[in-house]
Image (cartoon, rainbow, N blue to C red):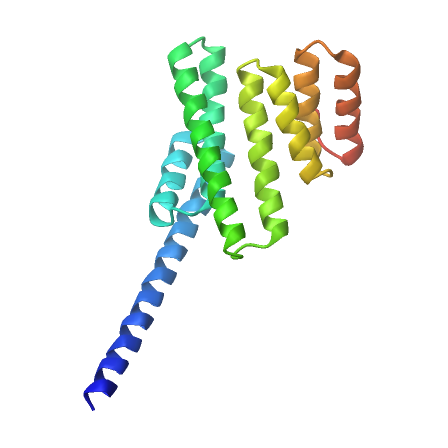
Length: 193
């Protein structure tokens, strides 16, 4: 009889833990979705805070790290325009840190088989594209080209990747290849930014 009580208590605790975990995941998802809405409105501080809350609740949220890294990249762009070297360096470092975490988590989720290869491929492509863009902002065009090429290898039908590769080629002085990549972006259906 004591075994039955312990067994039942164990099941109830497991059920309670699953419910709490599910509620936490739903809360994290709400913060993540709020972040997207704030980002679309250009409310980047609020977006940053929402993504950070999602990460605090679910530290293995690849998507939240990727989205938050984009906020850091936007901040780095503004700092570069404003010629604020300290803010630029800090923002690019934080973006790279989030992207590194996102890549590590993706690898771990892939090994645990908790995400599909297609989902992992999409994460890696976005991570490489964003890393490429950070290098573009730092004016390290060979690395920007390399990472954008990696993104294209993983997702060859993503027009923004071709556009970003074209920007890196153009900035490195290779106008012919830049023109080809801008054309590829347009053929696939993306905007030329």
